[in-house]
Image (tube, rainbow, N blue to C red; front, side, top):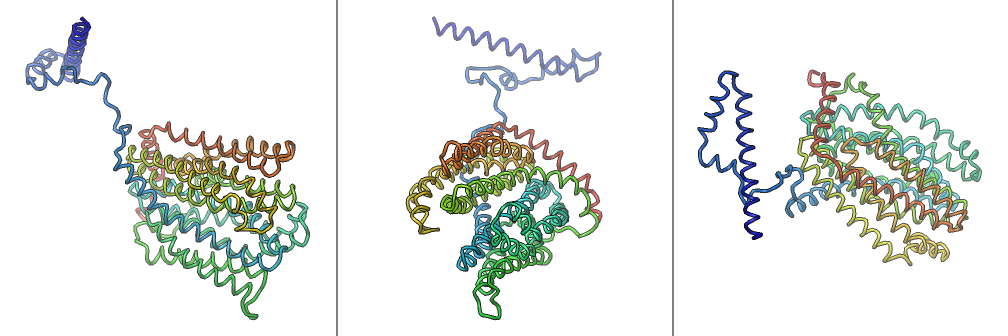
Length: 538
């Protein structure tokens, strides 16, 4: 009986759908013909149908009840996922290498100074922190605004716009660097007003007076790296930085500990760093002009002075996204200094560890931004979606790997940096909270790359500001000082902030309408072409 009812219902549904399709066919025929011959065209349209075409208008037991899904949302094959993972890693590996090598420019300076005296090490740390908060975070933040612009220009059929936007950013960063120079030259008086120890403040101010010479090189280098990444030539920055890192290591030894004619002591370290950054910028420029394929090069002319306002607005949003998290770490370090010398030393170990492991998800973030941006610029919504969702999976794997490494070596981790048993014990106690924070921070960092590729710089900045400054830091300070959890309380607050940021960022990427993002990307490309349409005529 139930089988008869099922066949009856299927026949009724078949008849209804067939009638609906025939009526729809007659309606379309009537609308496409003149009013005097509409009925004749409809009959001819039905009369000319073959049995095979009629059978295709009918439904059967194998006809799907729901319409087929958009190809963008079809399941991925294992081969597609493997190819995407390999493509992301092939972009991320040279970026990771360049990040590690570039970090060595600062690390070599710190190691060289650290063997002079405790005050010298403290002064260099204070100088580096001041440089990061007041200058380098801003420069890096503005440069990240190029992530979407350059990728879309490269894949959108306007490769010369890659060079044009690069020139514009260098001009903009040159203007932004002017107040940074004034700030660094007067850093000693500012640090004294912040109640820093006079001798350390004087040496930190001296450090910044020489380190300011690196600003031109840092501005060019951070932009040039994105210039090459947008073209899929991420290996070029790695090779250049490897060469410069070797020179920097030799200079750091020569100017700090070398023979008497060259030995400068404390100031030798910032001078070596400045020479290295400026040398790196010079190599980038020479390679881009004489060696790199010419399709992305744009002639230097008045067009590089246009659209700086648009670039400044994008840069502000990007700086809010990058610097908001960067400054958060410095605020936590400042709070840790109020807990005493042992917690401050432990915080230095934890922060250095976090900076090193952060380079892995940050490299994947930049690689993901490249792949998503390329896919959107070429109109491939499904490929962009695959790149973004693959990045989510990779963020989970990287986070678990980093956290497992911390937990496996928890008891002995501090000995890599310090031999004080109290410091090592405190590091071992707080390290699980660092591992927890990395589980969340990897997701946030990599999803920020997707958001940058979509041009959602302001969204990422708002999420970071709310997560860290409205929630995480107040909670951490309350737990550290009022609840008496100490340094562990600060990291509890950071972990909570990173968890909130990760949840919101991953959710924002997961619900993305990728077809719509392609349309919006084409609109941005069209606007870019209109604003710099004179490019091809130059």
